[in-house]
Every structure is written in structure tokens, then in C-alpha cells.
Length: 339
Image (cartoon, rainbow, N blue to C red):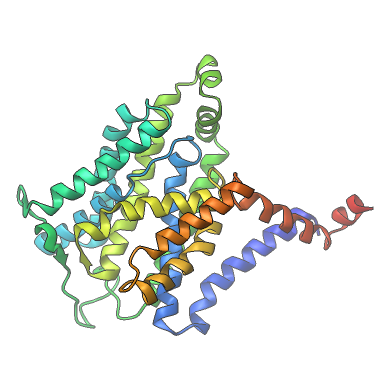
């Protein structure tokens, strides 16, 4: 067996184990932690398309989460449109907003782009908190929107409501697998090569004739679309949204922390970052949310400082090197290389 085949089999084994996990874990608390882990890995992978490959630092992705959550919820509550359709509508709306934001701001460099995205998400949050109606759509201001739980015979796939955690687990896992496959495809496409070139050597890429700005704007729109899908998932799982739950800078910061710690610009980085950090966030929220709110962000900040000091490109590279050394011991080509 070659090292490539061994790695492929390990990846397939991990995937099978992930799908089989609910068969051995029945605790709703642990399933909820796993769902949030998959969801944040999904959102960070979406963030990584622009924040990693394009080499900028967006800190306003909570806007897209909020657009997805509010769009599907309003369509469901006022027009009885399935959240699955609302999810797509919210994603398209977020893509348009991502394009409109990205067009002027992605021309900025460094902190200016990050600050402009932060200002935008705060502006949207304040606006939503202070209006009850947006045209014919009821947003309900700071009180937010409550999705009434359906009875057992009314709930199900079309209503995106389930009586147990398992369906949410599988939906989040499938969303993560699909976005990772899409990221892998983009990373190995002409689009991905131009994005990386624009992030690392923009002047050189432009000198070769690549329209870097348009690629970054397209990546921002795609990232916004994918992130908004997670907003609908979050709304349907919690059945209650309000501005500070889905339009908060905390969420934007956490996505950036996970990507930076895991490995910004790599495919596995968001998953590794979420795998290491989300359990810490969930446990700190469960046990310290009343006495020490915001503790998870302090922990993430400390971890980020340590990682940036010793592994400025994130934890993915050293972990993959370790994985390569371990798998090499079980393959003929690895043993030959060692000899």
C-alpha cells in the first residue's frame, strides 16, 4: 500500500466513524457539541475562501449568518415557505450583499479592510435592533423572532424541525463534507490559484494579467452564500434568533480565531481549529456563561497568541508533518525513504 492510499483510507475511516458516531453517543449535550463543532468548521471553511485563500482578514461574516437566519425565519413565519427554500433565498441575498460590500472594501489593505467589515456588522446589528418592520417583513427589533415548535406529526425534513439531535447532526456533517469538497476543488482550480496568487503576491499576479480584485469579490460572494446557509441551520436548530445571537462580532472573531489557529489558507485548517477550540468554547459557555461571559473569547485569544508565537502558519502544518511520519512507517515507500 502506498502512502497516498493509506492516507485516503484513513480519511475514509474518519468519515465512516463520523457518520456512525450517533449510534454510540446518545447524550443530547455531546451531540449538540459535535453539531456546533461541525457547524463552526463549516462556517470557518466558508470564511477561509476569502479570509485564507484571498489573503485578507474579514471580520464581518456574522452579517451573512444573520441574513440567512432572518430570511428563512421570516419566510417561514409569514409565508409558510420551507426553511430549505428560505435557506437558498438567504444565501443568494447574502451573496449580493457580499458582492456589494466586497466591491469597494476588498481594494483596501491590512487593517482597513478588517475595520470596515467590523463597522458594517455593527451597523447592521444596531439597525436590526431598532426596527420592528423592514417593509412588509417583521424583524421584531431586539426581541427577535421565535419559531414555534411543531408537533411530532408536523415536524420533519420539509419543516426543518426534528424531535431529536441526530438529524441536525447529519445535516451539519453533510454540509461540512460538501463545503470541504468544494474548497478542495477550488484550491486546485484556476480560480483558487489566482486567489492564492492575489493573497501572496498581488502585484506579481496583476503584472501577469490576472484581475485579482474580481476574483476576491467573487470569493467573498461565494463565502457569503455558504455562510448564510449556516445561519438558517442555526435558526432552525435553536428556534429563536435575535440580533445579538446572529449578528454579533463575537461570532466573526471566533471564525477568524479558528482559521488562524488551525491554519489559514489550508483545507484542513478550519476543521483542525474547530476540533481543538469548539469543545473549549462550548464547555466554557455551559459552565461559565453566567459568571464569566465571554470567557471563551479570552481562551481563544490566549491560544491564538501562543500559536502565533510558535506556529505562525497555524497548527495544520506540524500536525500534517507528524501524520506523514506516522503513515510512512506503515508503507513500503516510507521505509525505503528512511533506509
